[in-house]
Amino acid sequence: MKKHKDTDYLHISARIRCIEGQLMTNAQLTRLAEAGSAAEAAKLLEEKGWPAFDWRDMGQAERAIGQRRRQVMDLLYQHCPDPQLIEVFRLKYDYHNIKAILKGDAQRVDPLPLLSDAALILPKDLARMMRENELDAMNPIMAEAVLQAKEMLDRTSDPQLSDMVLDRAETRQTLETAQASGSDFLLGYVRRSIDCNNLRTALRLSRMGKGLDYAQRAVNPGGSIAPEAFYEPMTPEYIDKLLAGTPLEPATESARRALEGGGFAPLDKACDDLLIEYARSARMVPFGEQTAIAYLLASEAEFAAVRSVLAGKNAGLSTDKIMERLRISYVV
Image (cartoon, rainbow, N blue to C red; front, top):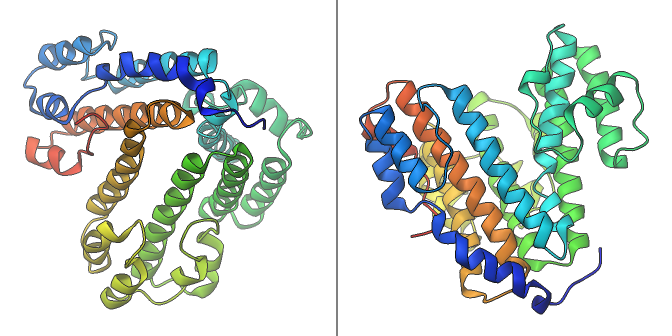
């Protein structure tokens, strides 16, 4: 991947600075959570440029999110000097689609309605490639993982083990792509994401009583914390030691509560908030690849926040419960 100068990003940075004010603030997300009617929620979203839809229909909500995501992707692909930087964030949708196709085919259920068109490979093309075993056009890491995951699912009928194979491949491919980009900012984000995923995985395995063999399959290398550190038995004291002085240190209390039997929602929120705080650091950079990457991260965080609020309202959760799960916004 060719390394571009920060001045090559002057145009896209200026565009983003003009439009990032359309992102929802913490106060606006709170108002959305407190909305008492579909009309009120729709009005709040439309004020921020969202298409009209009925929040009581999550199918409509997902289509609206997809439309907003395509707008963001189109903008960045059109004006970003290194569109491959943006492709790093599309890999997760490819691996999501691979999992859905494998499980759908195993259960004789059509997976296409569950597939995301935000992936690098068109869903219909991906399904054909996997079913006809035509994997040469795939990245070698992805192609090997497809074969291994299918073999694992056929042999064990355990989708969790199959998912572990794909999760490790996704992490490896994402990390290698970020390293090849030459962007320290992007690499920092990816490493933090790996650390967050490993922490949540280690705590879940500890609560399930899973041993070392399972941890070695589920914990992925590439973060700022060595994977072997997550193989140790999790105790409150060890969590303090593990996270001290690392980017995940602010999540220590949430991790302790999750280990001791609390829900994982507060830890998920703490990890996501750490990543948004990291993205916010790009607002101090006048121009460069950081601006484009941070805007994409901020947009994805908004999509997740809107989905969380609407899903909570449809599930009948109280405003207080919805607010407990609400992540911080990129725009203060």
